[in-house]
Image 1 (cartoon, rainbow, N blue to C red):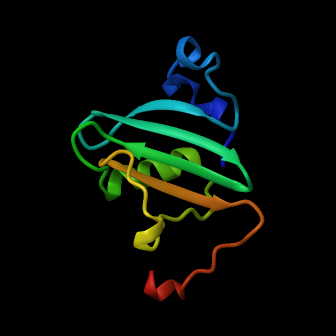
Image 2: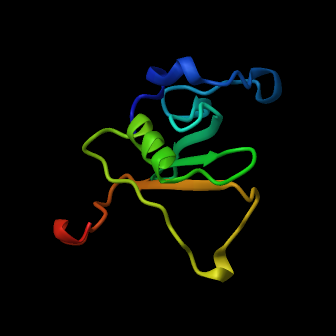
Length: 117
């Protein structure tokens, strides 16, 4: 994941509620959508061997262009991030309009042949 201090212009000050607003590896951000300028609320972390970015909007799920915008902003160009569709028994839905991007630190995500992508 990128050094998140490069995105400080979008950082949400959570010090009043959480006592801290994050650092280069984590934090909350409000990024205007390139589609309609509505805020994309992003919560990013890098712990437990994973980079994780959750992306939500107030009234709908983020769409593909918005997820691509966030992927490009929060991950380096050489990094592959993924969305996961877990088994139903493992599915947790705390917010109906949130999608997630994941990247394992010590594992290269296998990719299909480029012609398939």
